[in-house]
Structures are given as structure tokens and as C-alpha cells.
Amino acid sequence: MKGQRRETEFDERYRTESESERAENCISSARRNARDVISTLPDSLLCHILSFLPTLDAIRTSILSSRWRPPWTLLPILYFNHRDLPQITHPLEDIVSSVLTLRNTGPDPAPIHKLRIFLFNCCVSTHLETWVAASIRLCLQELELNLQSSKTSELPRSIFFSTTLAVLKLNGDILLNPPPSSALLPSLNIMKLEYVSYANRDSLSTLLAACPFLRDLTIKLSSSCLPNYMDKYAGTYGVNAIILIPTLKRLHFHWPVICWPYKVHINTPALEYFHFTGVLNEDFVLEKLPNVVESVVEVLQFLRDVDYAKKVWDFMGQFCNVISMELITTTAEILSYASNRDNIPMFHNLSSLSFSVLHFIEWHAIQLLLHQAPKLQILVVKPLQNYVHYGIRTDGYLKEPLTVPECLSSHLTTFHYNQFSGNEYEMEFVRQLLMAVGVLKTMRITVKSALDSEVKLLVHEKLSEYQRSSQSCQIAFD
Image 1 (cartoon, rainbow, N blue to C red):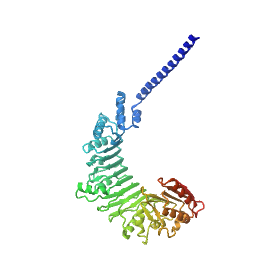
Image 2: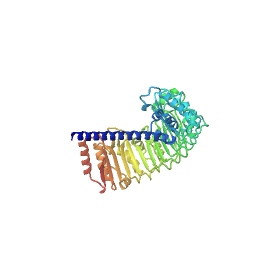
Image 3: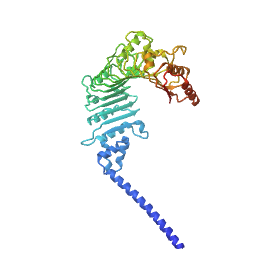
Image 4: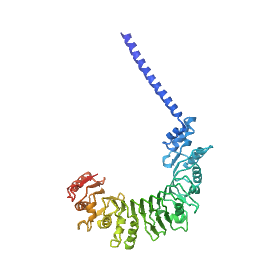
């Protein structure tokens, strides 16, 4: 019996070991076959697989075998970011140069569709011309450069004559100096220029004139960098922006320049989205924008001046067909100083209005604009940033009842108050609004996340007890 038991145990152990070995052999075989299957895929599929990896990781696959050496050179998208490569000991600009040289060596290098380079504290002025010129020759469609350095690098002039470039995004220490009259970018659809430098006051306008079919344009100028800009390029006191583009659909124009003279002329009749941050000086011309349906407006330089307020009203009247508008409340304060002027524009199509509040603001400052929107259905109040104290206060510090335009009381269906803190001004404003608007369906209150849970509960209970003019109104808490 003992002999039979030992024999049975041996058979079971042998069977178990054999099954384990067979399983391992199957797994090893599957792995070998999987590698073989991948390696036998055509270059186009291998290239597609590598496109999901960071560029340098894709290049590292070339050490797997000789089969994997060519595929990375077919990648149509190259992306280099200094922050993603903390362990690299060689200068990233040298790595970029080596990669482009290796990739483009050969009788028929593959096209480059997109080149993205994000470099910080690197000197690329000696490399940039080579990178861009090599990519342009290979039918470059998208170029994105973000260069943060102590030295400004001039954008190579070859870029201004590309017939294939469709997207151009530039940020940081880059100098734009397009050749006058001869530059042409016939395929460019999207251009984003953020905090770059210009060789002279007309450099920007020259570049814009070379983009006849642009559809999406972002221009951001930082006033904080202008003193350095003036030191580097003596004799230049500002940058002109002449935007005469009939195909433009979207424009984000960030121009917070107060002290330096400049000229701005915007004529974009097809524009549908307009985001403006800036100052309106005497040389600011905005022609009619009849097709704008969405706008964000932040007029800077708060002057207690009727003439400036009239200028702001005239500015906004150029896109009076807008359907959705976001307004920084400092702009509303400026507008209120011309409350008695004639011919204030009406916004007959405006159905959604959002106020981004920088600080506490009196109700009367925004009341005037509400009078000019007879079909307003959605009203939103939100902080511009994470300010502790902000909101809308009723006139006379709660002593007077809230005066609501008749059009608002008969059309407003949705009200959203974001980052609600529950202070006395906010509570009273909401209470009076509930009583004044007879067709309100939804009041959504988003309470500040920093509030104590007990305070949130008290705010919730108190708001729920308020009387409502509209019996169908529901208060929703987020």
C-alpha cells in the first residue's frame, strides 16, 4: 500500500510538473510568436503603434532588432518636451538635432506632419533655422514652439513661405520678423501667438497680411514684458495689429497695453467667436461683426469717465447680434457711467449672459446691460478667479428692494450662482431675485468647497425656505 501511495504521489507530482512545464512552454511560445507577429507587421502599422509613444521612447525601440530600426524614422509627429526628460544628461537641443538628422538621412525621408518643441533654459538660436528648414522641406503641416530662455531666438524666415503649414503656435522667447510684402502662408488656418516679441511695430500686421485664409487666431501680448521689449528694440514703442481677414471665424485678442501707443484695426466680417481683453484707445477700430454668436469681453483701464464708457458701448455695439456673452464685471462698471446716453445698443438675440466677478459689485452696475437684453433666458454669476470676497450686492447695501428689468422678470428661466459663500449680500440678492422673476425654472447654487459642512447645510436650508414668485422654480445645490 505504501509503495502504491508513493507511486501515486510521484505520478501526481510528475503530472503537475509536466503541466506546469507545458504551460510555461505555451506562454514562451506565445511570447515568441507575439514578437514575431509584431515584427512581421508592415512599416505603416509599426509606425502607427509607435505614434502612441513619446518620440524618444519610440526611437529607443530601434535597439530591439534590425527590423525595428526603420519604423521610427517614418513617424509623422515629433514631440520634444524638456519637462518629460528629467534624466537626459545631454542637452535636449543636441538630441533634437541628432534625431532630425538621423530621421532625414536617406534618399526619400518621410514627411513630417507635426513638430512640437518645448524647451526651457536652452539656447536654440543656432539650431532653430536647421530644425525648421528641414521640417519645411518635408511638407510640415503643424509647428508648435514653446521656448523659455534668457535669449530670444528669431523664427526662421523659411517658415513665412511654407505652402503646406496649416497650424502655427508660438509661445515665449521667439522674435517674429517676417519679410514685408513677400511672405505668404496660403494654407495656414490656425495661428496662436502668445507673449512673443516683434522686430518692429508692423511685424505683426505684416504676418497677418500673409495669412489670407486664417480661420482661428489667438494673439496675447503681455504688458509686463514691454519695458524689456523696448530696451532690446530701441525705437519701437508699441505693436500695431491690423487684422483684415475675411475668412476668420475665431479671434482671441489679449491686448492689455495701456501706456504705449498702438493701432488696432479689426475687420473680420465672418467672425463667430470673439474673446477680447484690452484697452480701447483712440486708434482702436472695430468694424461690424454681424455673425458673432459668442463673446467674452474684458475692457481694461477702469476710468470714471463718460467718454470712455461711450467708447465701450460703441465697441460692444459692433457685435450686438451675439447669443452668448461672458462679461467681466469691471466692464459692466465702465458701461454704467454712460447710462444716460442715447442710442445704447440693444442685444435682441442675447439669451445667455455670464458675469465673471472680480470683486463685490453693485447690482445697478449690471442692471443697465440687462435692460438691453430683452430675451435673456440664462444668467450666470461666477468668480473671475479664486477670490475670497466677491459677489453681487444689492443697491444701498440691502436697504432698497432689488429693481429687476421687466424683460428679465418675464424671460429669465435659469440662474446659476457659482462659488456661493452665503454672505449676507449674496443671500439677500438671491432672495430678492426669487421674488422678482416670475418664470424662473431653475436656480442652481454651487457652494464654495471650502465652506464648512454645517455652514453649507445652513445655507441650503435657508435658501430652500425663501418664497418664490415662480411656483415651478427648483433650487438645485451642487
